[in-house]
Image (cartoon, rainbow over all chains, first blue to last red; front, top):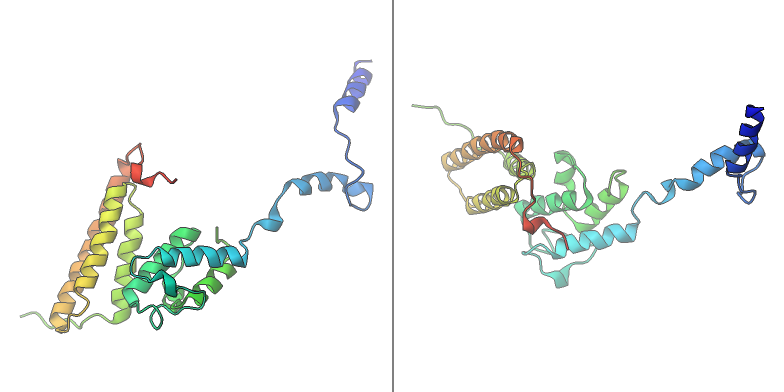
Length: 126
Length: 92
C-alpha cells in the first residue's frame, strides 16, 4: 500500500521529459536532458576575440606605438622591438590567455599573426 | 687563474630572462612580483650592449644566481602569503 502511494507521489514529482526535444527515440530522453545543460559548443574562443585581445595587449605595451598595431604587424620589423621586448610581450600574452607557452614555441612567435595563430589553435586558451 | 668561461649564447640569455619573469609570477605578493619583473627587465636592458665576453659571462652568472635566489624566495614567501590582496590587484 505504501509503495503504491509512493509510486503515485513520485509520478507527480518526477519532471516529465519535454517531447519537443529534437531527439530520435524515447530511449535517448535521459541523455537529452543532460546534454542540453552543457555548453561544450562555445568553449573555444572565436578568432575575432583572440585578435582583439592580442591587439589590446600589444597596444598596452609602453614601447609600442598603438597607431601602428595591426593583426599582421611584425614585432621587430614593423614595431622596432628587440628580442627582450618580444619575450615580454609573449609573457603578457600568456597571462592574458592563461596559457603556458613552452620556450621552443615562444621563440618562434615574432609577429602578431603568429601569436594569434598559436593562441587560436591552443585548446586551453581562456 | 680561472679558465675563461665561454660567454652565453643568445638563446641562453633569453631563456634566463624568461625564467626570471616566470619565477616573478609565482610570488603571491604584488610588490615583490612587480619588483622582480621590473628589476629583471631593467638589468637585462642595461647590459644589452655589453661586448666584452668576460663581462657578459659575469653578468650571466650573476643573473643565474639571482634566479636561484628568486626561486627560493618564491617558495619561502608562499608559506607566508598575504591574506589580503593588494589594492593594485583589484580589477575594475
